[in-house]
Length: 257
Image 1: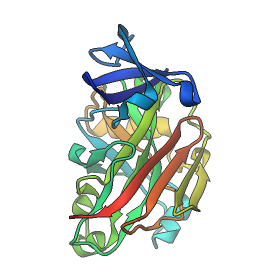
Image 2: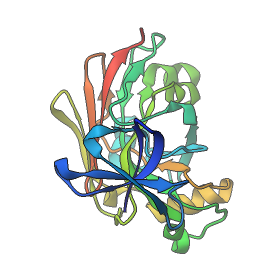
Image 3: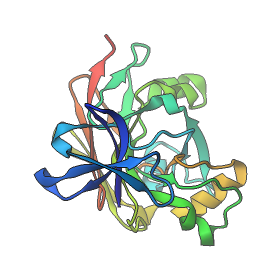
């Protein structure tokens, strides 16, 4: 199933996105998308509604330096165990929403990533059962202010600005995410291209590691790490992150007004 969240003339709703191309429709889900969704009977052509971030997360957990080539380009060695950090849920925006550059930073970078969406409350999940707690997968951009990272010595401010966590365009619930291509394009030029099979710590290991630390709740999002090729974005750019089997997350970049 392809799960999304929309703004329609009737309000905001979770939906099942059905069909392909211009024939896609958004079929309204009653209440929430967890478990076995039920439907209200209402639907809209997807072209007549606006896609929002597909989930409302209580927290966004990120995995740092989870591709060896990215760790190398950042001037460090790949960590033996997953390195985790948090982005606030207020950093989340949906497809088409602008990434707003803070005036306090002169070096904001894109980071295209595969995101895991948790489907049920869980704690201390063994890797062998980790995929049982996954609702599905979406596309993410872990936008980062590099100068803030250097100034602060830690990543909260650099990663936590409003609009610094675009998610979307929807959640794919049946994807085998163990070996799919991920790419990022800025200004029509491909900047990143890799495969999730190159993750240093795979999705089951990540879920085991994170859930040993904190309880995960339905809708929580785990960003699995970015491949090599990260770089700056400036006002006027558009960032397109594509994950094979899901789709493309596109966001314009603007200066804060």
